[in-house]
Length: 282
Image (cartoon, rainbow, N blue to C red; front, top):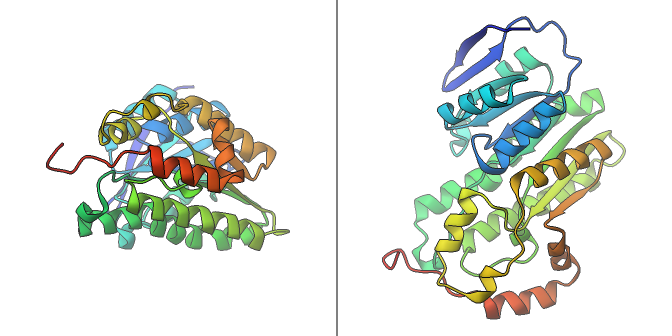
């Protein structure tokens, strides 16, 4: 059935959503960082499953194009999540249109690959806000309603860098390790409440952010042979973890060894990872 689309504004928030929604029987899934890469693959996967999907990111054009491509019932929230003071502005309007948030997926993130001494203070703080503080801030806002209902799922997309921090990604490692630790501890805290926590540890996945990360390092044979995943398969595994209530997703699967053999991983990474290019060299 053809649907008419309309736009709604709430501060810096823009919503694009089908009219005529009369019930909240379908699952409402929120995906941050939804405009490209893993986030875009997650949008396609959950729309395909029949969920209503709220996309939250800065890039409006990309999200609207994605909405047209995947079809289904989607809404577009344009917000800069690195600004903590504005990171919750979209929630009330999104829930008004699609109902309570059933699945919250913290996927938005940015990566700095450069020598630690070159980390720009403003960029470092923005990354820590986006990768760590804002997910905690949004979880804190959404969790009370989930607890009242006795159901809900929170998915934290961390990184294998949270299991085995990679030299050259000093601030990124800290942000993803922090998110992973928060996610793992929250699962234990919420046992028996009906709230399910999924912690995701992606290894290298073929996205624009990953490709930019590779280019920041000198040519190295070890980097060329790293197993690499694809966004659509990671998205499928995350949805399966949500549906089947699995606690973790580590993808590609080979990176599971990082969790069980951290000392070996540390030895290998420290010796095989080249120092990244300086900003001037790039």
